[in-house]
Image (cartoon, rainbow, N blue to C red; front, side):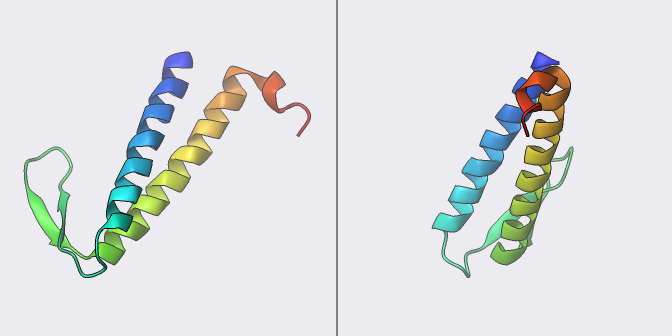
Length: 79
């Protein structure tokens, strides 16, 4: 389970970096999204990427918290 929690932590950090990079770009900037399991990129809007990034980050944080509780339920007894 520790490996799973560490993996979530790494993915969360990656999403946070992506979110910061997108925030530093101008609103009308060209953004390209890589298609899963391929080397093909498609142009998309800055806003769509921000929404997708935020959704992915929220989902990862939720999964991370669930995995953390499964790993050590004592951490969340008082909550």
